[in-house]
Image 1 (cartoon, rainbow, N blue to C red):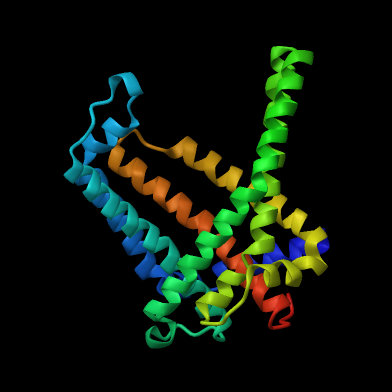
Image 2 (cartoon, one colour):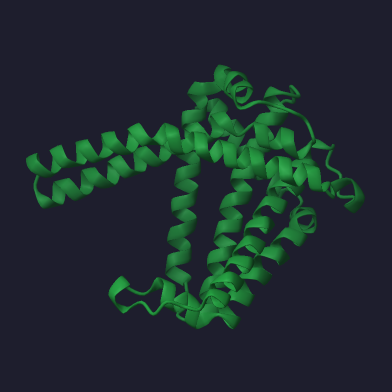
Amino acid sequence: MTTALALISHAIRMLVFETGTTFKVVMPAILLVLGSTLASVVLLPDTIAALQADPEDMILPSAGEIGLLAVFGLGALLGYVLMAILWHRHVLLSGTDNVDELRPTPSIVLSYVWRAILVGLMQLLATVPIVIGTAALGAVIGMTAGLGGSAFLGLIIGLLSGVVFVWIALRLSVVLPAAALGHSMRIFESWRETAPIAGPLWGVAALLAAINIGINGLAAMILPEAAVASALIAACVYLIEGLVFVSVLTTLYGHLIERRTLG
């Protein structure tokens, strides 16, 4: 657990040690995410409401509205990708905040997106047996336990499944910081490089899950009724969660590939 705490604390310390620098580095990504979110909520409120309605009450929006919403969604997604790349490059290029040095080339962005898609597909394949096992275990629990016990055990199983999902992501995703630097790394190489700390990564996955639960719980308590404010706060929550995870990946790459210390 000591290694897990060292990895998490190092990742978070990099984010908060110089908060102003952190904001300066990722500000273009923040503006892109929040701008896309704001535009979709302000310009297409009826479209969003229609897509969130129950199937029997849904009024299908026009193709143009769905297309515009997709554009805003892609803009927000690109913002998250840009945030990750900028933070990887800031830390791994010796803490630079020079705009010209931080700016990724189109080939780096495309390479990063492609590797992120591959990692996502590998996670999906790896979690299929987890989902099947969870469903089977849930069915057994439902038959042998009461309603309260079944709900509690179902929650525990769900949390454990989430930890497994994050652990797999940590094992596979060291390719992403490499892609942000323009370096080539295969997914099996990421799995191999993280093998020496596979045990501590369970602790990292559990801590990340706990952090996400805490952030989401806090957001749920302060989330306003207004659609615009609610959407912007939700986007900020995803940004914070994503930035913490990205910082952990950056720490893993620096420690395992570049042999940096965690001090």
